[in-house]
Structure formats: C-alpha cells, structure tokens
Image (tube, rainbow, N blue to C red):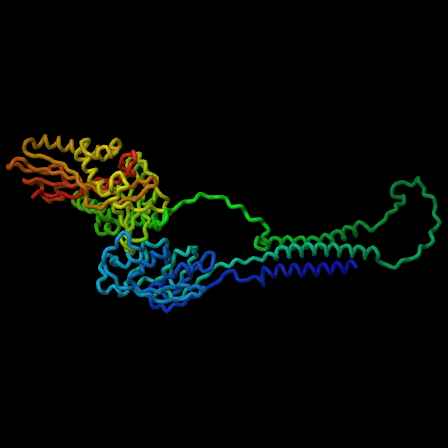
Length: 623
C-alpha cells in the first residue's frame, strides 16, 4: 500500500509542478503589445501625438524605419505643433475608441505680424515669420527646414535606416519624426508597450508540488524498507543443538562473538542509496524555488499607508515653463561653444546666431577693436557649466525667455555669469540678450523651481517699488546726480561696485584733462537709459529680477577755437572713429548691462544691483 500512496504522491506532484511551470512558459501571455503604423511617406515630418503614446500604460518604445537618415525628437505637444504650423506634416492620432490613424495636415495662410506676449503657442507660431523672414503671400507653401539641433526639443535622436527610442512620456508630450527636412519622414512606425504578466499561482503550485514530491519520496523509501524486512517465506523454528558451556579461559579472538543485523558494508551502501534519492529531490526543489520571481506569487501584502510629500503649488492659470533644466543646460553649453568659436575668429556673424541686443552690440565692438589692436582684451567667455540657477518664463507663446546663472568650471576665481536668454519664435535658437557678472557676495532672491517657472512682470507694473520701464532711467539719474538724485534712497548704493567705479573713472578722466587741456577743453558725462527693452521675472517674495540697459556717454570737446583734441592714449576711440584728432571733439558711449532685484511695492527693502557688465560701445567725432 505504501507503494500506491507513493505513486499517487508522485502523480500529484507532477501535475502541480507541471501546471506551475506551464504558467511561466507555454501559458504565459506576451510581455509587450505592439502597434504598427504605416504612413504614405509623402510628408517630410510626422507628429505622433502624446495620446497615442499613452494609449497603454507604461513606458513606450518607438521604432522608426526609413530609407536613409532618421531623425526623432520629443517635446511638449504645443511646441511641436507650433514648429510645424507653417508646413505640411503627417499627424498620428487616436480616437475615443482607441483606434490609431494618421492624416496629413497642411499650413493655413496667416498674417506675418509680430506675435503679442499674450498670444497662444499656435497663434504665435502662425504669426511669426519663418526663420526671421516674411512668409508673404506664399505662407501656405510647405517650408523646408532641418529639425536637428533645435532648442525647442527636450531631446533628439538620429540614426540611419532605423531608429529605436525607449521613452516614458506623458500625454502632454509628442514625438516628431523626420529625415533631414527635405526627404520624406520614415513611413513605418512601430510602437510597443510592456504588458504586465503575472502568474500568481505558479509559485504556490511549484512549491506545493515539490513538497508533495518529497512526501512521495519518503513514502517510497518506507515502502522499500518494509519490503526488504519482510522478504522471504516464514518458516517454523528448527530444533536447537545442545549447547556446551563457554570456556571463559579462552582469550581474545578465540572467544565467540554473537552479532545481529546486516553487515556494516550493506548498511553503508543502503544509506548512500537513500541519500542519493533525497539529494536530487532537494536540488530540484531548490532550482524550482530559484525560478519563481515576485510576479509568480499572489500579492497578499496589505496596501501601504501613503505618506504625505511636499507639494509645489503652481498658481492657477500659470502656463508651462519655457524650458526644462536639462534643456537649459544643453542650450547654455551649445551657446558657450558657439560664442567661444566666434570670439576666437572675431566672427560677428557667428556670434549673432547666439547673441542679441546689448550682448551682441558689445561683442561686435570688441571684435572691431581686437582686429585693429592686438593687445586689446577679449570679453569674458561665457561658461558652459555648471548651470546653477534656471528660472524659465512660464509662457506658452513667443518670444519666451529664461534667466540663468552659470558658474565657471575652468576658473573658480571668476564671478558667476548671469544671462537672460530669449527665443523669438519656434524656429529660432535662444540668444543671450543680457550678459553680466554677478557682484561679489551677491545674495540672489528666492526664485521659483525650474519646473514651475516665473511669470513676466509687465514693463509698466505698479506692483514693484519701481516699474521696469522706469528702472534704467532712475539708475542713470543716480549715476548722474549721486545723492542729489530723487531716486537715491530707492537704491542700495553701499555695495554697488559699478556706481563707485563709474564715479572713480569720471574723477580720473577729469583730472587727466585738467593737466593736458586746461582752459582749452572740457569733458561732460551723462548716463541715459539704453535702447534695449527691460525684462523682468517675478520672484517668490513678490519682487522681480529686472534686466536693463544703461548707456554712459562722455563728451570731450575744445573750448578754444584754435585747440584740437588729440587721442594720444586712447587707441579704442581712435580705432572706432578712424581719426587721431578733432577740432570739434569726441562722443563716446559705454554700454552697461545690469541685473537688479526690485522689491514689491510697499517693501522696506531697497533695489539691489545683482550683476553688471560695462564695455565701450561706440565712439564718433562730434559734427
């Protein structure tokens, strides 16, 4: 009977273990779900909408196959649509029932007026001029542009013939596929998502079957043992021979020894055989345990109690930040490399691809001076990293801006660089409009996180202690009149190194002229608001960081009709004017790029200068 129960246990164990293994192999479903999309291959761009990517939960893998170069990038859906607003593209979408389809979208003729700051992303894209040029009456014609390298993308990929991208994007982001902007985009697209496969009974079945198997082995061993003990026919006892007394005088080996049981050699062999039977069973059980992962067991754990986490509250109605932190770091790195090349070659055209406004104007002048005066110093390089602060404007339209503070890895003794970067339209690169060095021991105000962004304070805002539109003129008045200025009390002048430096320069130049041109020449100084528009981003305290431009002008002219002004020790003015002397005098302009912290209206704080850059801008002969 023991053999019968052992066989039954073996059968039950085989069924249980087999069922458990089958759940993990032949009966296990596919681990991914795929969706193949075939387009007609007529358009140069394909937009895969975020709703298609998030049709199923989990990470997405996008594979694009084409005949040549394959380009892909992802970014916010609104930004990608704005970039495609003036051209024909294939759009892959999903309907309410989950069916994926694709169709061709064509541009709509729109006026070429400059977009307003409150315009939406789509309207701004439609209204902005393509690549800085007017679209004219032919605005509906597809525009050919290479998408590689755009500052709009959060990340881009390139391949040849085929490209596979593992992604994990929310439904607010989309994927752009292209070749080089002139050839058709890849026509075969394969989307795949991981499918969670669980076999909660595989583990219990395999473990339970292993236990039953051990029970069967135990029963089998007992059956064999019982069979061996009961082996042979039962016989009646034979007559015992007459025994004789044992001679106790016999010593050692001559004494009779009575033993019972099997020989030692037989017991050893039997024990080894039983051990060999048990060891494979234990080894098999260990292997089965090793093959059972967490998804092969029922989830019996109680749900964890959620713990509260710190929440960042975004103001209601606030738009998305212009860039992400990683995006800003990439933009700054590319900008630094481009401007470094422009500085080395003195190429103002190359510099103009990454600079604008006052930042470009000072470098154009610097290149002119360095070309004529080899010993003239170059402007400080723009550091590539690390980007310590990223404060993007929370705005969906264009132009959009971002404030950055970048340390100098190459020289830690150099003050950090603060910059205001602006993107004019979806097709333009970000350009540095203001570039300055932070003052020593500058304490920056608290600003919003980079993933929240800050709203632009209107130029005429009355919520600041001084409106951004009035800031440059007010600071110029402080430079001109010092403590007699009506704005003197509004500014923190104690730690203002620029103000002290300008006054020291005035005193020195006045003294020098008094030694060489007494009663024959005079010098006058005047600071005025520059031509660059101010820009302000709100801080957490209700104030704002404001970037403005101030021009410091000085006029040197003779007071005697027989006198002339000679440029003996001023090669910069001599180079810019092209003359060595003048009977009418010279007019020289220095440009100041300034960053201020302006507190909120009603605050007891003063306006603080955060950083500045001052350099010669132009010089001309007084007519």
